[in-house]
Length: 143
Length: 112
Image 1 (cartoon, rainbow over the protein chains, first blue to last red):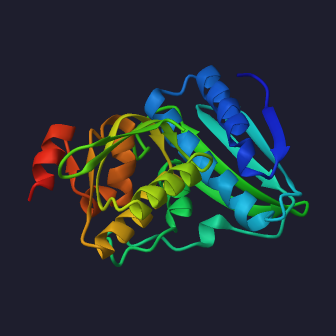
Image 2: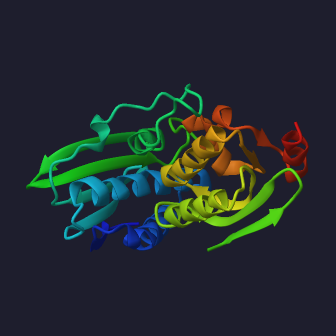
């Protein structure tokens, strides 16, 4: 991959397959192994769905996904013009609770952190920008 | 929807194929709700042909488990392997649910 690739879709969960296909293509072109690719797909899905549900719940917004190669890492940025929303600000779920006490939800932000080698959020030009970095090598990955 | 059911004496075997993601999860949740409404309370979910699961898929399992637990039912999982197993381990769902290496093993456990 030599250039930045991007994909723009409506902020609607029904567009998830288009995003998945785009990320798979970028990951394959970059040469990410199957486990790292699987983790990246989960992280991007969680981020995409969070924007659809919280940042642009009226489904009128658009989401842009950028893929770029920086040194030996694949960098994915998810941009939206919705309300300021930092999915990374959500607390981790308590993974030790049993079925009765375990809350439904709360895993999205956790998976974004767990399946990326690094992740950051910022507002840029009135947009939410979530940046995920996945290294080619598995040394720092969780999978 | 890629979901098949097979009735055994002690449980309903639910075989899922493909992805359990944010797009497909609502369909699965609806199906489980229908099955519970029909009186099913013990399920064995066969994951052999599931190749992807995100938090949306896990939420369906947890919501269903809470409902069947409330009526003294069971939700057992079988054939969770590979990358799907990694997701279960990271999320703590491996300890949350009884998991089995095969449907036969889960069926034996459902007798108890």
